[in-house]
Amino acid sequence: MNMSQKQDTDTLHPDTLAVRAAVARSQYGENSEALYLTSGYVQPSAEAAARRFNGDEEGFTYGRYGNPTVASFEQRLAAMEGSEAAISTSSGMAAILMMCLALLKSGDHIVCSQSMFGSTIKLIGTDLARFGVESTFVAQTDLAAWKAALRGNTRLLFAETPTNPLTEVCDIAALAEMAHQAGALLAVDNCFATPVLQRPMALGADIVMHSGTKYLDGQGRVMAGALCASRELVNEKFMPVLKTGGMTLAPFNAWVVLKGLETLDIRMRAQAERALGLARWLEAHPDVQRVFYPGLASHPQHQLAMAQQSGIGGAVLSFEVRATSPEQARARAFHVLDAMQMISLSTNLGDTKTLAAHPASTSHGRLTEAQRQSAGIGQGLIRVAVGLEHLDDIQNDLSRGLSSLDTLK
Ligand SMILES: *Cc1c(COP(=O)(O)O)cnc(C)c1O
Image (cartoon, rainbow, N blue to C red; front, side, top):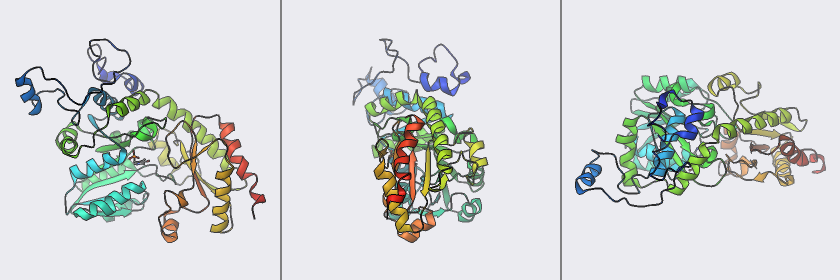
């Protein structure tokens, strides 16, 4: 830590650690953390090099294994999540790949929610299946279904909460207990809530996975990923996969995300405040059928979400445009999206700019209509990842289409 020489970091608050946790300053005394662009490191002596390569001494040896800027990002994120350690990767998906390669082998079994991020479902259900890893996908909010899916060879439970785009919330503490009773680990994808709203380690999770691409950077600039876990898991399970797999986070991207963490708390709170305002406005709108947002009392897991997420619903919501048929719903949703003049039509999320998208034809476009129905992704559904613009401007931009639906056939 940057200040570890002077102060015991255990007593510091997460907001402080978000700004201060980092590797020690260089001899130049820079106040903002340095960006170290180097692929290799000069060793102080042949003996030291031998010790470092053998893992007997701390010290950087090669860029694929580690970098001071990358280490600062890892220390800061671990401090914010309340984990012993963290290891970063080139993207969120690379973090999931690292986790699976490190913890699973042919014949092992993993249980996941069926509402997880689309690429996660494909990686685990299709790509890892080719290597003999078995998987079961269950209903996100149905604890009995998670339990029924457990087998003797289950090694990992992997949950994401809230989910995209319907913001379904699952009970992290209950899943952690269930995993541990079964001799398995619980990993939580904490992309949507971030450590500002939700700290899964404190609820019993063993691993917290992040896409740094989303709120951690928060300004839509770089790709990054990370796993937070015990020092033992990081050093003995994940680090060896990083060394051979090479899914290393680039120092520049690490530096961007490191600086993003400094404003994560205020960004998340401000964006979530706007999201709650937008959700309430949409819920009262005559042309909106339904709003999905954990901060609304109408959300099926509202109580659980409020208890688990520090009383904050997050910055992503979805809503269904009122319609009488799937065809009309799709036409109406497209009309609302095409009428926007400010909000970005984009499937990304976690940006200061508000983004909106039509899940049924994009992120969930490859599903059959039956699969989409069972996933609850209707043709009238629009997802909004709320940014930092003034709430009035966000509402006005969605109003353009919503108030002119009558002009459609
Ligand atoms: C984006 C995302 C990922 C994947 O992260 P990348 O950085 O795009 O690889 C995983 N989980 C969730 C919930 C995401 O939103």
